[in-house]
Length: 281
Ligand SMILES: Cc1cc2nc3c(=O)[nH]c(=O)nc-3n(C[C@H](O)[C@H](O)[C@H](O)COP(=O)(O)OP(=O)(O)OC[C@H]3O[C@@H](n4cnc5c(N)ncnc54)[C@H](O)[C@@H]3O)c2cc1C
Image 1 (tube, protein in one colour):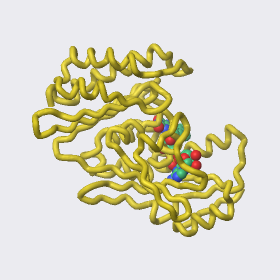
Image 2 (cartoon, rainbow, N blue to C red):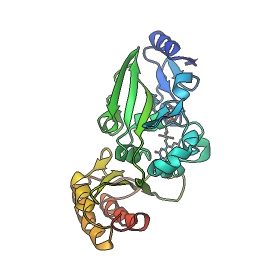
Image 3 (cartoon, rainbow, N blue to C red):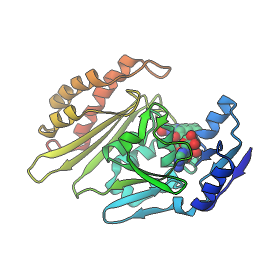
């Protein structure tokens, strides 16, 4: 197996032309495990880590752009992510361990498209968009359209994610990420929830909610978001919303938990909002 280390997008296209069946590798923390388990041997690993264009983490007044080779550790250390995209920052703190985070990338987490991927619910509530390139042809895809199903994305053969973009929000916007796993660290989510609350001028607020690990992909529920938009986060209101959650999630039984337990967890995670967001905020 050849190891290709392109240093520019032009060299990446050349490597892809030489090895059309080569596997794209960012941090390798999912890919190498998958290759070892499946016994599959692609003719080449085409590594993204030295491509300067993909290592950029850029901030403008409007948005933050996270290159596909930016490690999760770098993202975790970014002040803007911590202060303006708290749900994503919190998801990074509970994703794997420091050694994994020093290699793994956000784009890799997205491309793996696991229903339990920790960064996915935050990316959904922030309406992230995904930039891709295929031999010089660019696309920008909203994250909810990018994920096509469990383990599936809309990437075409040869198409590579170059970056993930997050729009910066108004001041007063607040968000959080809540994960339940089998243990505190190094655990895949049994259920998770990202929440984003944005105050609006008319005294109302906009709420975005996205659950992980309780359906084939990230689950969103506009009806529950509008139910809570007019109500304060009292225990009673959150329990009422929770009853609606239990009806729309589609969890499965697996080694980590039963579907019934996940259904209950998905509802109960809403109760965490009461502590983190002021009632009526
Ligand atoms: C011990 C351990 C613990 C873990 N714990 C967690 C956890 O708690 N939560 C969690 O969500 N994940 C966890 N993971 C999974 C993994 O670390 C993450 O999904 C990580 O973000 C993957 O990123 P990567 O850069 O390593 O991807 P890679 O392994 O390099 O790639 C993953 C897949 O995406 C493709 N790919 C990568 N980048 C691109 C790109 N730019 N364009 C097109 N395709 C691309 C690859 O071809 C491959 O199919 C864990 C993994 C390990 C080994």
